[in-house]
Amino acid sequence: MNVAVFGATGLTGRHVVRLLVDGGHGVRALARDPAGFETFDEAVTVVRGDARDGSAVAQAIKGTDAVISAFGQRSRRKDDLQEAFYRNLISAMEQAGARRLVALSAFGVGDSRAQIPLVFRLIRNTLLKNVYDDKDRADALLIASGLDYTNVRPARLTDGPAKGGVRASLDGRGLSNSIGRADVAAFLVGQLDDLTWLRQSPLIGY
Image 1 (tube, rainbow, N blue to C red):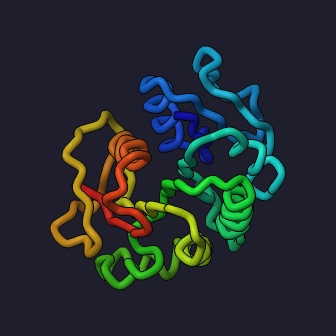
Image 2: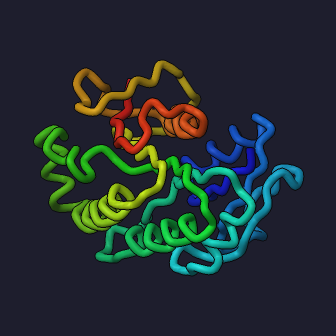
């Protein structure tokens, strides 16, 4: 399978790319600076551009069978970067006739906001308000689209080796409040040919 990956140079995205390459998949990745991207022995085709560049987003999708987005805004300042990227991504996929999208969101976005613990809700509404407001708008665009998406909302992300044992649900009950990026990446890649959560937004944890 040929897969377009966005957010490929991020902490979760790098795990996604490695899993895809190790699994024998072809990868096309969008990057602002291709020179700084690991080439994986030419298994990855890097397209120069950024999330606001609709033509670059479309070029990254060209010739692929599915898309994984691990893209996320790194700044806490008020911005529409995630929303702008999703507008470009959805438009490019629709024009290319590509339908399968596995997207990384976050626990607390959209209708999962009411399910997060009170302490984190306070953080979400203050320190992380701009980031989550942008994610809310992006998720709304995705859910309103006609794409065959799975919109994954993990608990707080941590580093370290994969542990396995990832669980998913729509209400988040009984899930841990953190999960490793390596396990999130494995879940994202596994959704490419698993339609259990088609057009749904599962929460994941241990």
